[in-house]
Image (tube, rainbow, N blue to C red; front, side, top):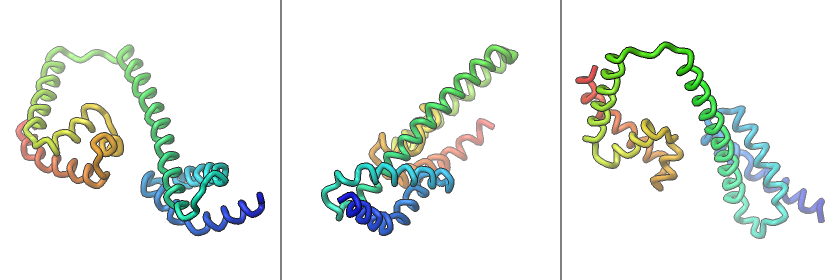
Length: 172
């Protein structure tokens, strides 16, 4: 029985491994990372293989495992980045000289002007820009939060920047 499962699993992996790897690569855009995540996906799939009922749904099941592994990686990566960002900021606040009050006022004024220019955009363009630049969400998180495809979020970000470019010339 175990040998039969192993052979069936190997057959299904051979059928779907290339598509699964390409899917992971399209999500991560890093070959080495995609290779590592692909190995984790295969291990998880192998361990859970006996529980799958319909082999006709194996490809979507494998893709779901791949997506979950990528999400796990991004979550860990984001926590790590957040930790380093906070630590570096805390260190820089302690040891860097503080700016002059005039610089702080000018910086605050330009940030307010920029936010005002962004507010003039239509909602479909304004929302992704605010989420990305002011709430530090990734494009994937914005897509999930707004229930939009990633391509739509990217298009809206590009169009928002195109609309903002002429407005920002006055700030320069």
